[in-house]
Image (cartoon, rainbow, N blue to C red; front, top):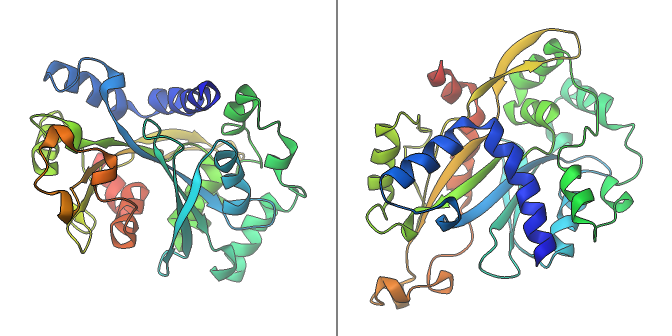
Length: 297
């Protein structure tokens, strides 16, 4: 799986550079003795945002990961945010799950649809079909390739009025939206309550939408996230403005009922709650929304 390792590194390196909280959290975890090195962190999942238009969206993007042995799992629907999503299980437990969401562009207003199509109608073939998927260097570069022109600031702001998700994708494109630290693997900080307290002690601002800890109805999947850092974005009109980039998520997966009595050292991924939860994910999306990111100012 060396090629998949290379692709993951191509995703993570620029993400780490662009999201200051990543390095800050990792270094603090080392100092606190939670980990000896960065590779000790278990990455629960990585997430991407896409546009539901011809030649793009989930149907295109998923081909990359299906090619590398991922398996398509459960669908999710977010009515208010006008999104679809799927998650994908990895070919082996040492790789993260994948979560891919897609904007239901056809559900937006005519004005927003027209604006999005202005950028995407020039894409007349699926760009993934044009790639050599066996070439990890080419695949890694694809995630940072500009598939459409940058918007003007006015276009970005017009989209954000109706869908902050749409505005995020139009500017950031296929950039890695977040990666996720598995806190249940941490010896002395194995609950989100403890880990969140640690995060706040080092100045990480947490997403409060739906509560700091988002909990699935069965109580077995618990998630928190940082608020996306703002960065100085340059628009095609020449204007600059701070907008939200990516963020970090934190997940605690509890043992399934039949495995709750197993000693912790015997628990594997197979013994813990799998998949995702629409109610949790709905609020995690808001890590890039203005109501949360304004707390960073």
